[in-house]
Length: 261
Image (cartoon, rainbow, N blue to C red; front, side):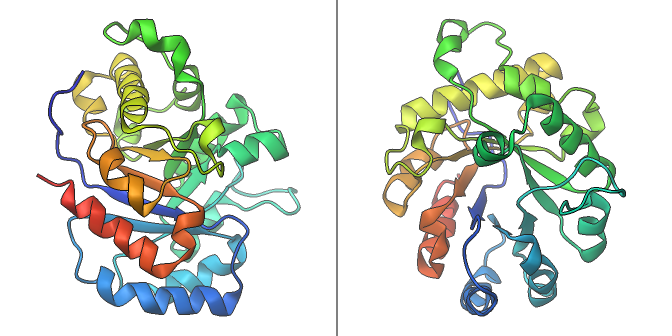
């Protein structure tokens, strides 16, 4: 297991889910953009409902804040009422997209196969997918020093070439921790992230694996974020409820800065 933290730019992503109204989005961005303008060692992003994305891109045009889509379809065009085209997202200036979130799998029947289609669709349109993994890592514990193949990681990246995978971020969110108020311990989160990185090394190479950011999500708070982000294989957090408040979001970005050696 890694003994020291190899420097990858920390990434703090707020996932607002189906929360906030238009005026609340505008007010939140107004509050966080000035402080974020002073931050260059940490990347920050906000995932929001589709109806807000174009306005958010315009409002953050002169800010380093990244606008993230919460979902995307696997086709660029077509008769898919209610879905969002990856080409349309790229066209309005969105750069990142969440793919395969636990809630998409649970409530909307997403599968490893559709997640893989969406990952490839995002990449071919110049979007950077943040791939959610909620697999139970305990089954892989015996392979910590071998060559594991975390199934959701391997499935999501099927057909993704070496030159494309550099634009991928992996977010590990254990199902039992999402919205429960009970986060994984820093050690549990690190072990899972290590297994994911081992899988990336097996699928691509150790050099490529060390360049890919791995986030932790699931009941992240200002109180537990420091110990989690301080782990050698964890490069940031994907935050739900705690990131609905501007101050908490900025505090998480500040905490991420303290993890930089």
